[in-house]
Every structure is written in C-alpha cells, then in structure tokens.
Image (cartoon, rainbow, N blue to C red; front, side, top):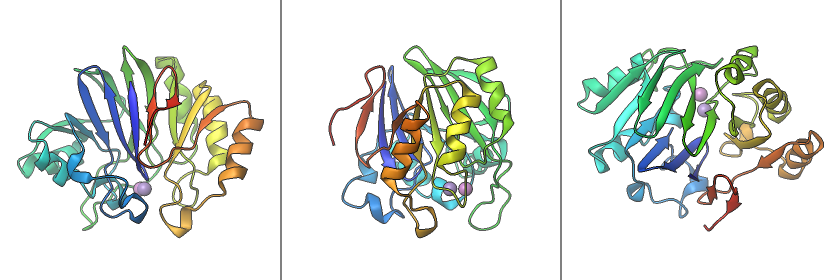
Length: 235
Ligand code: NI
Ligand code: MN
C-alpha cells in the first residue's frame, strides 16, 4: 500500500487495484502549488469525511477527470454529488461496506459539516479501511473523543492518520492520547500548516511523539509513503 500526501487533509491511497482519494483540497492550498497536479490525480474512489470547503474543494474536478470514480461519504454528502450526476455510495456512522479494496467503515467524529453555501452536510465522520495490505483509521476533522476506543474493538490498526493542527481539530497532544485510545503505534499527522491558525512547530511536535514512544510521520506534500516499510520513496 502506498499513501501520497497531497497536502492539508488530502491523501491518495493506492492498495490492490484501487486508487482512493481522500478529502481533496489542492487548488485552494498554496502549499500544494507546484507540488501536486490536481489533474494528474487518479481515482477509483473519492472518500469525503465532511462537507467543509477544505475537504471537498476538488471533488468534482477529480471526479470529472476520473469518470468511473465513486464518491463515498455520509448520506447527505454522497447524495448531494449523486444529484449532480456523479457515481456515489452513501453511508452513515457505524456502517461498513465491502469495496474492491476492502472493508470501509464510516465512524464518528466530533466536528461540524456544513457545505460552503450553508447546505446541511450531515454529521462529520472518519473512515476505517481494512485491506489485505493493512488497516488504517483516517480520523477526519475531529476532537479527541472516547468514541475512538471502539475502533480497536472492531479491528487492529496498523496506522492512524490524525489531525494535529489544533484550533479547528484536536492538536498534537490530543493526537498522542488518541493513539493510546486507538491502540496504534504508528501515526501520520495531517491538517496542519495550511492556514495561519493551524501552523505547528515541527520539531516540538516530532519530539512529543517520540517521547510518547510512538512512530510518527509528519508528511511532506507530494511524498509517497509505502506501507509495511513506511519508507519515504520519492517526491
Ligand atoms: Ni472541517
Ligand atoms: Mn478541515
């Protein structure tokens, strides 16, 4: 399994024969300019955690570029894209579905989820992906919540992708506690640095994860991380 960090909370996960894009926000992210070509992103699935602009901005552009792509999110968000003619798969909290790449569960997040125009975007969530190449939790925008404790009851996680930028989501100190709730040793941080309100001190954050005895990836935009080895392959 390969994960390419597309910046902010945007990921490209490649596992089996599936290319899974998560929360694409490229064209609005000045940090991604010159590093990510939004029109070169392949997608069989587009997973959306919630309807905020910084998670959906490039959904339609990527879906237009990849006509087979299925948009997967909560009922309200998925149906919204369905009504615009896109392929979609609606889910809701606690529900799982077997896709080509494995089992996907939409799980709780503590956040909000309006579309940029104020339209109701359902309740926000995160995703658990269980694949032959590993099990991943993508938290989405969320507070630290004891709801995370149910995830290791369902599956043994290999990696948690957690927000660490603070202000709009939990910060890195809460993410360290979340790793304990999740019973996971490997954390990738995301949702940091994009805006002034979520800028972090990289060295301070890395040191805190190290003190906590966790393996921590502070991803670089455009870098590819290969699961199992977790070595940075290339830019
Ligand atoms: Ni948000
Ligand atoms: Mn966000």
